Length: 258
Ligand SMILES: Nc1ncnc2c1ncn2[C@@H]1O[C@H](COP(=O)(O)OP(=O)(O)OP(=O)(O)O)[C@@H](O)[C@H]1O
Ligand SMILES: [Mg+2]
Image 1 (cartoon, rainbow, N blue to C red):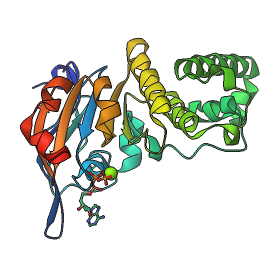
Image 2: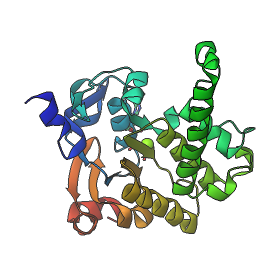
Image 3: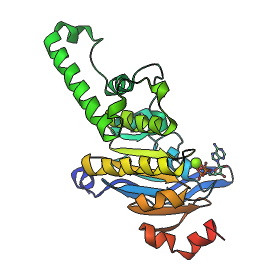
């Protein structure tokens, strides 16, 4: 298949028999997952199922034992984390922690990057000013999209836990991410706020060219927001389908309730 063809694929991420063993423990065992473009793909499963390890192997934090990872049509198997990040596959925790002393707006501006310190660009100041202006506009656009528009002048330190999560998402968007992996974004937040976070993420999918891979074990809250769901248990995908199908799957019920 030509590269162009692969890029046109409806999937932003595809893994083929992806495997990661830690000695005798096969944490990720021949996992085949496809994450569709512009959708929220959810990866659920009980503690120790291998969800975080799967994302770590995809994003280069860990080297796979075997298998293949295609991102946006490119074979990224075994790439260094910074290269995966630059290609547009971002794990929120990879984005440097928000600068708590900076305002919300400045945090997004830093992630957008700029050319203020570049002396050659500084010589072309009129151009630089234009870029600065469009960065500010872009930053506001991003902040509105994640629900932080009204908080632009607060310091990040003044935000609540859920808002900090959304600031992380904003910063990932600012880096030009095409796929954002969120590892338990609603962990530790109360259900009402978790709903709010997930609603904003769903809203982003409508307006932006972005896809999400959501890792969760709090299925009661997160499942309804997913477009497609994979269930892992002890390293393997044991079920997949739309949220309804998965919720009615006897094996899934057994794991969560049985
Ligand atoms: N660096 C490591 N070295 C050895 N074993 C590891 C390592 N990282 C994870 N494991 C093991 O791999 C298995 C899968 O762990 P992982 O963290 O991927 O699960 P998880 O689905 O993310 O769980 P949780 O819901 O608790 O976050 C577990 O048995 C874990 O102990
Ligand atoms: Mg985990």
